[in-house]
Length: 346
Ligand SMILES: NC(=O)c1ccc[n+]([C@@H]2O[C@H](COP(=O)([O-])OP(=O)(O)OC[C@H]3O[C@@H](n4cnc5c(N)ncnc54)[C@H](O)[C@@H]3O)[C@@H](O)[C@H]2O)c1
Image (cartoon, rainbow, N blue to C red):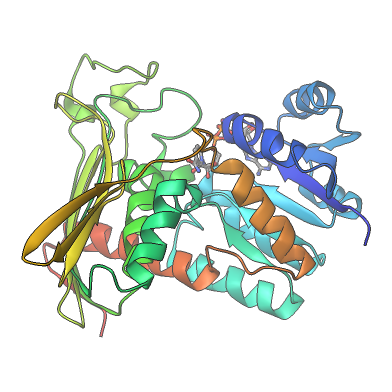
């Protein structure tokens, strides 16, 4: 079988820092053949930096040079470009969130099924060692049934001061759709995506009211800050389980926090760092996880899982229907915040 020809659309921060370097570790299986960016100078300089032969500012011109694409544009363009790629018969690895609305996500799934091509979403936390081990532990029944879960994605005053992250039209939202989505996805994955009963949420936009903003990740203009800086949610599942969720780009707290904790009927766990709790022999046993190597770059197993899925030897760890569910929850949190009511999923 020949090498899979991979192209990159939107070659800004995440394409250059994660996707291109990850695929470059797999050159026995893939060839990096093309890049596209609306900013042609950017496309040219990335092509030159990584010795990629073809570059363009028009994504439809890239398709004839590739078998698969990685989409790393602002969220607004994920659906349009993914659907065009499927119509051209290409596989798609799309950055998170899957798209800005559930309707767009559904159209992406329809187009991928019609083309018979892979659609995978880059919820990369699932590929981390801790997450993979936690999933195996839960699937083996070691904590019983998940009852009460908590997901936290907190950054202490770290609004991305580059790109278009504070632009609602291009991104669809702020801390929730950009950062919190990873931890919603991870919690739901570990819980095995139980059926959702209802979602209550609140989102906040306080930074736009502040004349001078303290920020650790560059500079942004408060008067044009259109998105949420904090979001919280309470999610009830049909089996009685619940998930407490909290995210922020700009918490006025001591530290950042990236965590998922699950308390089950017979045990529990914290994912980052991975600690397992088991109720056994009249005791609660705490067990810390240790790894043979410290190397834990999720970009490489993610790229490999995509390549193997395109070849038909694996299935994507992140299934499109699951990423659609994450987007449904995000949409419900925004709607619940707007209406002040719980959003029913029945
Ligand atoms: N998985 C993660 O942890 C993670 C981290 C950062 C960003 N992301 C996601 O990756 C995407 C891009 O984020 P980024 O940080 O790289 O942003 P960025 O602003 O650094 O890069 C985006 C690039 O896309 C280009 N672009 C814009 N519209 C385009 C179009 N229609 N066609 C082709 N190119 C276009 C821009 O010129 C820019 O170079 C977003 O969806 C974001 O949510 C994911």
